[in-house]
Image (cartoon, rainbow over all chains, first blue to last red; front, top):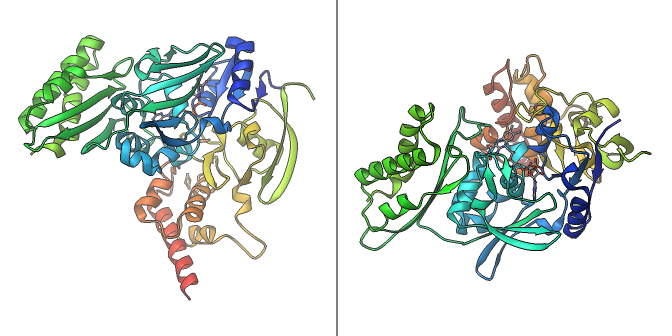
Length: 283
Length: 163
Ligand SMILES: Cc1cc2nc3c(=O)[nH]c(=O)nc-3n(C[C@H](O)[C@H](O)[C@H](O)COP(=O)(O)OP(=O)(O)OC[C@H]3O[C@@H](n4cnc5c(N)ncnc54)[C@H](O)[C@@H]3O)c2cc1C
Ligand code: FES
Ligand code: FES
């Protein structure tokens, strides 16, 4: 017989009470695409599985007071099929397109992707460029923290055992250009080795007037690359500028990670992917 | 019933079932070992091969990544549910005619992924077919015959409707 007990709370409040009571002996399960793998490998050994996959409170994508709210229980398939996201957070929608497989996208949630704190979570760079805040509910009430603070390191989370992500709040933006790209070992089911998300607007004279850029997977936690944004804004996007921006990006990455052996591959890859991704904005 | 077992009730291939399962059992385990629906296969056990694909509430999912307890209240279709008394499902027929099966280990999963696609989309493009089966690995046949067989099933269904 199983050593694990299964609990299905009826509400977020109910879930928090259970989590507070059981402490670190409980694990939250949403889509289960990380949890089931970690259970099988023995990576985690919880006594209780708290199933939040059917909580209606965690579902839905909506606009609320000019903010874009995405429930933690929204699946990657729902993200890909959302018209609201196509309009106001297109890079996030794109990150769902090459995410795992159809079977996994149908159950994997954005909340699980972020809470897992894997450096390679594909939804994280798009959330970063929309300056997303994470809504947490716990026994002490609700909190709102910036997305970049959720992971304190690879697979290490800022969340307390009794805390639940309920939603993400994004700054919506219909940018003229937005994209997400990743490099993995193969085309399908590839875990990202390197990922990036961007949004750009240009003024009438063709110079970049607004830019948000985030790098994922190759740094221990996600990073908005403000020096790169500042360097690009106010300039006309030429090929030369993209190469310079890409070099600055690679240097900023090395500043964060230090010179590791994989840098021989990653330095040109970061620059190359940056140039390729931004090429459509060249005048 | 001890606390580590869970009572679940769901519909599988149009039949209602109710049973007590271990809390940590996967949906795959429940189907294969407890309900003897062994058409669904276990390949990798970690979401990478698609051999365990089933359709839950109209969506293709990996049963190895789902808790059995999460089947409660759901409508499930496995490969055993495709054929009817009047014969094989059109996808199964086209897979046979189109030589889309060699060892057959991947076949139930590929059938379920393509079945979910055909239930959702009337006339999927080749790119949509490729995308729908990207999570199903086949080690012997390769994918061309599979994709062509699915396309044939789609076009024959459209022809049938237009007649
Ligand atoms: C074959 C395969 C391919 C994959 N490919 C990709 C890929 O291309 N890109 C990518 O980014 N990921 C990929 N993944 C990883 C995984 O699918 C994602 O991280 C997924 O989004 C996790 O969501 P989930 O709902 O399944 O989470 P679960 O497995 O249910 O949970 C993940 C973690 O988050 C916690 N958790 C879940 N929901 C909440 C919440 N609301 N509040 C607090 N904690 C919570 C859980 O306790 C657990 O620690 C892949 C996984 C597999 C098996
Ligand atoms: S056995 Fe489930 S995906 Fe391989
Ligand atoms: S027919 Fe053998 S794995 Fe596909």
